[in-house]
Length: 121
Image 1 (tube, rainbow, N blue to C red):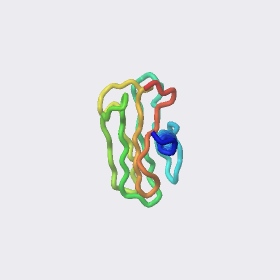
Image 2 (cartoon, rainbow, N blue to C red):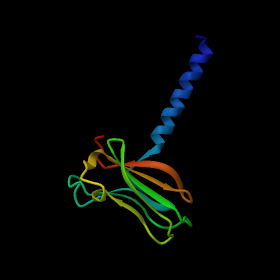
Image 3 (spheres, rainbow, N blue to C red):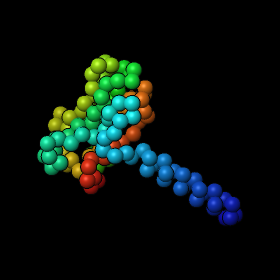
């Protein structure tokens, strides 16, 4: 292979890795509205949430729960005054440390994931 092509492939691979790293955020933060993964009373009780607080003019928000990378359930809201709040127990009993919250609020941020604290997935 020509050296330029190899160099281009390496730069593209590095760029993709940087994008993926940015897409996996800490468990909860605020980007116009608070959102992310919210633990329950204990990180081992299987009770946790994917949450997006109301605000920033959005009428649509979607919060989903994934366990070991597989979708298990979600909630979407269209009311500007209501939190999107998916509770793990609405869909079953899951290992919290292997879980992630997928959140989407088109008025505030694009779709991204938040892992559980002490993520083991």
